[in-house]
Length: 294
Image (cartoon, rainbow, N blue to C red; front, side, top):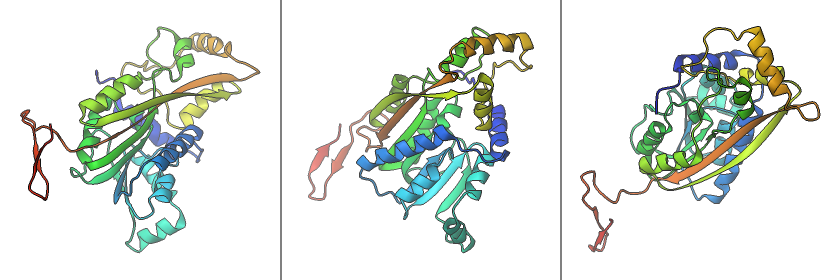
């Protein structure tokens, strides 16, 4: 995939959002809650959890579900990490002061993790893949840091996200990021070495009193255009009026819609069946019997 993302711009937008007065990111919070519910059906007692991206209330859900686990939180936007640190509840802050913290915060992108191989049992990511130019690279890193039997769980945007905004600006320079299709993400998981990925999708529509209010709320949560081929100058007044008018025409009952296609995925890291040179791996059980694994 072409390196379409301007990471410096992405970090700049997210830093501005993190330094602004705290505003709840309703969608990110809701997705963190829904993914936490999905873990109800998974038998997993991880000693170490990686949160790949600090978006929404994911840290609170992870701590509530895995109170004994060490949690490593990574994000490419250091400002978001600082906000996550500041928003920890009093018991977590007290443990940190006493040198007994069970959370670590590391500035790192999902596709370049400074963690040892096979060092975590769960990778949990909420919308961070939306800021990665190639999801396959992130999946490769997640597979590397997961131990055998570990789980990767994520939610990210699909290609119909903000389709109204994309259509309103027409063939102009990109105004919405090129989010990956659910099937392509599933194929990328398999290519990274994960077993039997489970993928599904849902559409969530938020409504706003005006186009201007929608744009303001997207900016407040750092969801701004960081496409490398984006227009670098201000949108002209005439161009903006035309796009805003096309968008406002979609209003129903005085509110304009914004579509978010949410793709969920999870997959397990299993023991390899073949060596890198293609030879089958023979496993020996404790009774001494040989068993072919491929």
